[in-house]
Length: 301
Ligand code: COD
Image 1 (tube, rainbow, N blue to C red):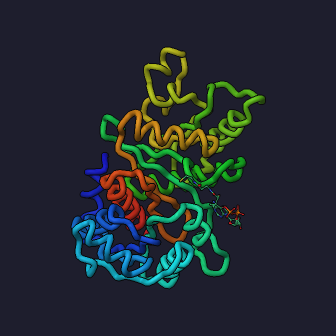
Image 2 (cartoon, rainbow, N blue to C red):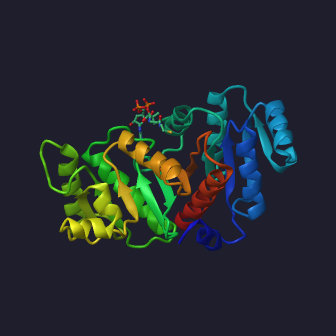
């Protein structure tokens, strides 16, 4: 199931309303106008300076009246106002515009006016593999150095997300540098603990979990067989779990830039999915991220 199949899954009558925080950039607004055109979302509210948003619309060749503009004078105010639209129920998807990721995430996490959910927030990158399967990679962009408890929450978030986009009983690989448990590499100990929790049915509604696994043996069945590793997830991984943000971010960028796989990024665990794109993402990647968030929002509604 690639991004194209997700389009069919979402259908043409999405009820999703998107709030874009500090949407002052032509590329972001173009992706939003295409999301409206494709029926991924029903309406889009954009926060930021009205004149700048209108100028960006003109630059992108789109009609500013497509969007509800909510005036904001700074990225912090833009983030707070977009989060507020979700908090009061006017929107059910949030998207990062041209502001720093941490500014948006801080508004989301704000104790009084934020939109925290009941679990840890975590980032999920969705990657279309060469055989057109979608695989998830987590956490490459939010939790910096998660402890075991946070890793468990990250894995549970990814399993929930996988089910919400139609990846049922996902196969999960806990990545490390080796397949053996080595106390000198604490991530291998955490991976083994989480794999055991998986074997005991501690993740719902269901997943097949193995680790530690080095990337080659997770990605390629041949590599695993060659090394004599008998893993139920080798070569068929739906969710790659990395031990910390740097390894994850490098793998995410390698998938995107070195391998050229289509990718998209979202944050889950808040009261709605959050579309997290970066400036360098292609228009297609931004559109895919809105699509995935809309599917996840619909799937978990
Ligand atoms: N889920 C739920 N609550 C959280 C989370 C989370 N993932 N992270 C923090 N909180 C809560 C804490 O419990 C606390 O109550 C409050 O939020 C503030 O926590 P701090 O002090 O750790 O928050 P910050 O503002 O220092 O950091 C939060 C960020 C998300 C901004 C931080 O984790 C971060 O910078 N992450 C990396 C983002 C990034 O730069 N990505 C780069 C790739 S795009």
